[in-house]
Length: 76
Image (cartoon, rainbow, N blue to C red; front, side, top):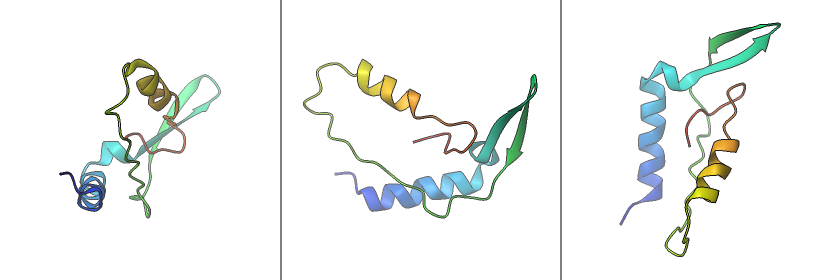
């Protein structure tokens, strides 16, 4: 079984190690500007039981819509 606490710690380590996961983007006029932010103080791992989900499309669409390039995180 997957231990969510261990996974959350591992994802935090990945975020600290890989700068690209800490990039944030904001639009200034016609241009997009990128900046690095500090590693998250409270990376949240959301665990979902998908065993009874017949179609993953809506679940994936919901996750995609939750992506915020301005405020992050850029992975979940």
